[in-house]
Image (cartoon, rainbow, N blue to C red; front, side):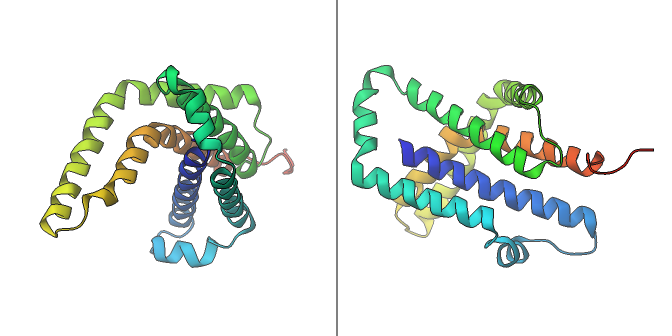
Length: 195
């Protein structure tokens, strides 16, 4: 459970870093083509991305060596995955707050941050059933392609699982981070002098 949430958070973090970087590149230079191949060599080895990758590796290693996942699953088995979802939500909010503090020029007040998370959650909540159907439909097409090319369908188990369970958390993470980055780019920093 612990490494699963950390892995999902890391994938969300990488995706949002890519989206923020490509959005900034397209805003700064509209003629420049920004794609995944231009992003990764330039930004993959930045300190914060390397630190996140090392943290994920350590958590996965400790989780496997200590058996914390087996213990946590046994402890919370009777609660029908409620603690797992609460644990994931808390981890996502704490990580998002630290990430937003990192990308914003001014320190983001906790009250303002929680309002943004609340609005992002309210935007996702009514659309979630529709998004779940769309995600399922997309995976149906991918499954048909796998069957056509006779690839093992077991390869899709984890992407489907992560996509349906952590997709809404990732969407909220992206919307809040996007808003913080937009505010950073439009608002003057606290260090600039005002006339």
